[in-house]
Image 1 (cartoon, rainbow, N blue to C red):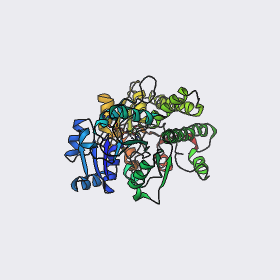
Image 2: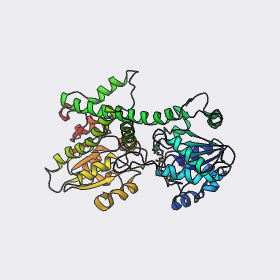
Image 3: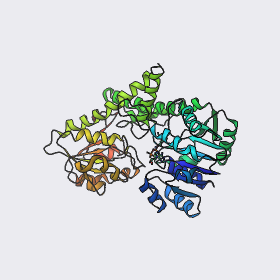
Image 4: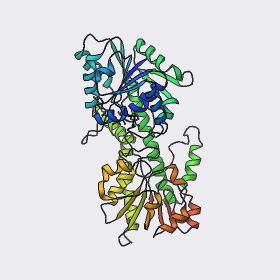
Length: 437
Ligand code: NAD
């Protein structure tokens, strides 16, 4: 099939590469010239595990192309995916639809033959109706259906998730569009469940899923706070909780709060949307407030110790919002760093992939370390903020030698607490009283 993808970001690019690998002819469109130039020159614009190999192969076999031209990308396409950003409005936090509506305006003149326009971006309920209206106004002759096709991939696992989706949700009442989508995703049948639902249900499923996951994270974080006071161990509690099939073990790791380009924005957009419908989503609202407060609280806990030291140097491992990605959008790590920088501290920051993106946000306010050992050099305090796999194999004895102080705030539960304590570190973990180790 011929596929045009509007928006070549964290969703559009892995999706385009994946669809090309399945044998489709894919044209990815973006409006940022440097992005398209890089991709046309064989340079990836994001980091995702496994992306490079498929990107190279499908560019070489000619199934994957990149263009700035909407016309080239849309002409003759069977399916057009809209994967542009839906960022939060800075004041109200509702989802800003300007990129979606602009994409609908721009694509409309170039439709020819029957085309399925699939909205992959996360959009408020009713957006499908509006996109349909915009296209119909702009090109009354066009033969098309607008469907909702929410994306559930996890950053850092985008390629894995593309090829192993839990479910594919298609929101449309059109039998013709359903046939096209069933054909496009036929390689995943019968293993993957394909759900055909109403367009508004599909739009809601995406927000309801992210709000639920955010609530689950916030829940375990509150339980961690409880365990810390009550003398229980959140790691043991999470194990016991997760062993219940009805609850499940995922998203039960405590941390400094959720972040990223989706959960903060989608919980806010969901709450805003509900308020507009006159519905109060009290659990979602409490999750948003609690998660916002949490990052400041984490920074205050670190400052409470740092202020006892003159000219405190804090080594920080992790800038990305989670391991496996270079994405720093709404990263709790960066929020905590910003709070810490309100105090007279020096920060030595290391992240395996996200330092370039961190630099765009933090500028020269911190020292960017070559590696983890460089970060901990003469540091008084070590703070772990992102759960990168490679941090798990760091040599704690070497870290001990290089650090000046002995305090570790391991907010991701990366290090072996017994080993660290034996080496003489003062280990602080979330959800465990430090003396309980
Ligand atoms: P992104 O910012 O990484 O990429 C969006 C791209 O769209 C940018 O490169 C931008 O230049 C381009 N663009 C915007 N308007 C355009 C236009 N008119 N023509 C051509 N290109 C245009 O965003 P993202 O992270 O890929 O997210 C896209 C959507 O998918 C959002 O709604 C997001 O909520 C949703 N989503 C994201 C994830 C994720 O993990 N990032 C997961 C699921 C869903």
